[in-house]
Image (cartoon, rainbow, N blue to C red; front, side, top):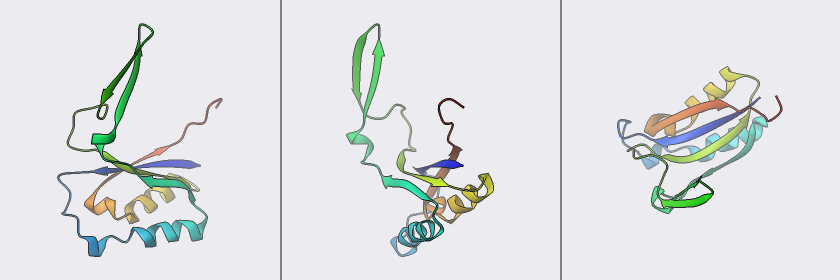
Amino acid sequence: MRFLLLICDDPEAEPYRPEEDDIVDWVGENDRRGLSVVGDRLRPVEDARTVRVRSSQLLVTDGPFAETQEHIAGFDVLECADLDEALQRAAAHPMARFGRIEVRATWPLGI
């Protein structure tokens, strides 16, 4: 099963400590286990645009879709055996300590 991990900032998390950021090891472990599908950081929310179409009119606004202190900072798509494995890999991500990670199974079209 494929799982989307949304890597999020969280103002209530413990402070970020670069010396404890082992993201290279986390990605390497996923690669070794054949779990990685795709993943990357996202540009800051200041670079975001929100697109809507209302009454056939294109509306583009600056910024994210919601006013919040938490923002999606990146994402990973992993191919895991089940939800338990996806949760285990999410818990090992450094942003599980410095932010938070939302884990969702993908829902392929036609199923």
